[in-house]
Length: 291
Image 1 (tube, rainbow, N blue to C red):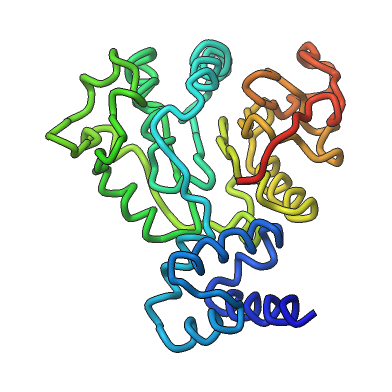
Image 2 (image 1 turned 90 degrees about the horizontal axis):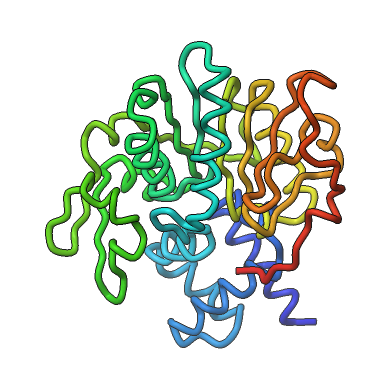
């Protein structure tokens, strides 16, 4: 059909702008995001939007921002952070030998990374100096926001709705501006990393990669999961989104640690620690709606 042909041409144009997107994300997801952008511009056909992209160089970064997944916030899914605080960090500290390496993969503007550091500073202050934190994304503009550690609230959003009261006092709040304290900001190294193209980052004790896989087709999901598993040290932890699961090919290498938090652990050695679960992928999978 003509519409499908125009959409394929548009995908080729998008690939030129952002090579990551067409091969990585589901076609249905890309289509919804592009149509949302077209509605804003009052453009009805893919052909007209192709012409618009080629004519206006300022549209490319706007489309990139629309396509990449920048839904974030402090302490998103607070129950997952509680599980990390109460179950995961004590195990990491017990086995600690040298620096503890934590990675927020697909970090967007860094609020997930800073949430975890705020929690560590409050709950395990003596542990903070041991932490070596990295935060990665493909969106360089979001990484720059994270480096600054300054966030604007308002328009129906309130920082007190995201951050627990006992942790608010650690933040500098001036009107609708929230600043991360320098001590925590300096703990995080932000840099660009493409989970579909780049190599693993080895020796990680804890990796958070939440709500990215649901936007990817199965082949891309498996590629990302192999990079993440390959980045973990033995006994390290991987936190996925609540609607996400491991690929079957990794079930021998990883085990389910906490079902509610979607937390998996890389096996130390076969039989070296108790099996917390023997659930299959189908048993750990829940239904979800794509964003």
